[in-house]
Length: 49
Image (cartoon, rainbow, N blue to C red):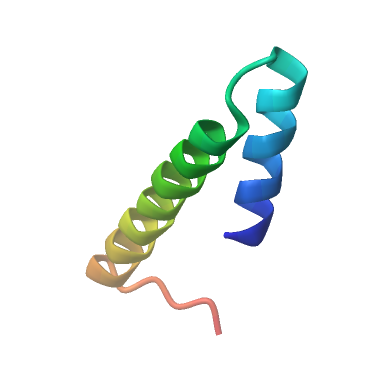
């Protein structure tokens, strides 16, 4: 999630947007995407060990 925040800040700075909003948006939606991906993997019994 730390790297998501960095990427959000970098994208906002590059695009001239509000950095705080971008960091929150990218971190929030990136975290949601990771959680949903983990849930789908769990439902289908995917094991990475």
